[in-house]
Amino acid sequence: MPAVTDPSDAVSNLLADLASGKVEIVDLTQPLSESSPVMRVPEPFVNAIGLKMTELSHFDERGPRWRWNHLELSEHVGTHLDAPMHWISGQGGDDVASVPLPRLVGPAVVIDRTAQVEENPDYLLTIEDVREFEAAHGALPEGGWLLYRTGWDSRVHDVGAFLNNASGSARTPGIAPECAKWLAQETGIVGIGVQTVGTDAGASPTFDPPTPVHYYMHGANKYGVTQLTNLDKVPPTGALIVVAPLRLVGGTGSPARVMAFVPTK
Ligand code: MN
Image (cartoon, rainbow, N blue to C red):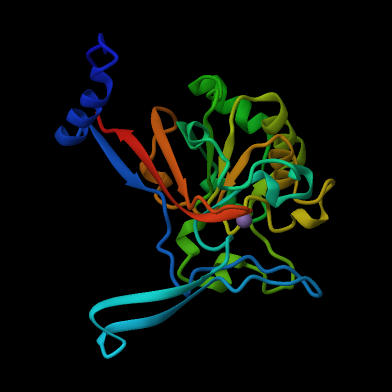
């Protein structure tokens, strides 16, 4: 790759690489619809509704030249960002409107534990897993995102299999508490992206502390993104991620369009 000699060339170089196919944009976002899976919390807590779309007009007497819809939308539905203020440990942290854009655009690394999760749906990522990745691929990037590939996106068309909670408690992969604490407090990453309905393991309400990814990441004013797809098309290192939530004032989270700029050669 030719060196960028003039900073003003950086964007035109990227545009040229996109046009020539040397860089491609991979959509990491699940399609958002009324059938998108939504996290369930146990009674007596209040659950989110997900997405409801109501037609306002469709080239008819309600609007003869236009078609549009009204949305009833949970903040935490589909592929979405969790803002720090979402969690008790992040009170006083950023709402989704205040998250600085440079924190939502940065280097991404992908740690693949698909094989382990196939064997064990309760698999938890460990510090040793991340250290092993770093030994092969270098340190986690400052200001970057750790994308945790589990293959769970293959279940998204079957809500029962995706939530995997038929027994009454969810069995989905996540991150071990000590690893979540270490990632939040000892590494330079600003966000964790997962393929499951939430950033924490299904069994995480029983962990100490409960839901440790939420607890430690948001406590460190960092972020989570859920329900990613196409992580098989992103290399272990070398991609640029863009996380684009709504700029929702007071919002604790938002559905987001998430994409990766990936070098192809
Ligand atoms: Mn959420």
